[in-house]
Image (tube, rainbow, N blue to C red; front, side):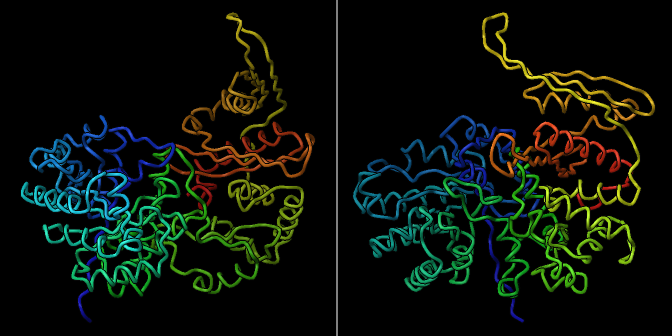
Length: 539
């Protein structure tokens, strides 16, 4: 077998990804993310635009990677100014790092409107800037901005821009689908035509945006056509609809034979098994919940709840899994719902270390209970921890750690001493823990927060065990219309181990539904601490 061709993975999370609305990395966050990317095995880490803002300038005060090439991003020199006299270009060259990625216009419309110079002056700026970077001993690459739209508007000029970068000595000429509207078939045709025009594929890269949901597909189409560098971001973040998702691309390139048999990257199988952890760690840093249906790494990526599917999975996982979940550090998940038969429940319980015979009456009781509860609004496929507790309670395996004898929540709208109108929430919870009665009172930002604080304020002998417990996410869904509607509350909790789990409560009273989910969360945490629960739900 011939040697596999090398593909180079270029991460632009810290630069293009920072264009995402609501994301604004600090220097410390950039340092942490750069370390994550470097250790995982990406070839290039683009850190930002030194000189454009104080954060990026401080970040480029020193090289932030050990293995990956550390890349500064910025503009080519201005028209009418020599490369040696352009302060912006000088800032890129003198910034810490191994490489410089120069963004250049390759659509004549943008040259005329945005730059206000001639086509020839733009070509000269590309050539001279690349030479200046190379002469400084750094790897030069050029992002041909709007390349595909420019190619369709004026083929000869777009090709001339790419050739100017190539002839000046650029290591990579990156073709950018900046507006994100190009289709995979167009990508393949245009890349092939550019290679035929004289630019080798092993010097071409692809930078795809996701405005039609095809950034990953466009990147793979470019690889098929000959490019050998792929740019993207962690979890596909980026302006508008985002960039090509490197998490998805890494797994596809490594696990799908159409690519894995022909290409290799710098990420081996051992690193690949940390893909889910990398994706989730990045979301944690962004303070957001991981998308459950993300390819390969989502909580539902290898989940099924249909009875016939679960039965087939028990016989052979390959029947409904396109790759082994453990290959990317994820795990199989058979979910329970009113659609599920015994196979779902048996497998779901077995995954949690709970063995129940198919002819056990308690299994029939559990199935009936789940179906009855889901008919009233519960959703256990989205609340693994609550399902596990329900199963263990049905089997008589949940200790009585604490008992809530009563709770009360008050909401008062009043003027404070300064004359400002305030809404204050106060909760009172009466508990019995290990035979000792306690009463906790707390104020909070809303009734649910007050109730949460009061409930966890004094658990007696168990108080120290929940010190690292936190409410990560809170979701409310109204199940029917009107102010008297039945409400479903889903709560995501986490602890110091990095584990997360979901619990559910349903009631025609939103406070009562929230309280059910909160109590399940604490009980689950106490059982998890004793390794009595959480083998799947808390992973």
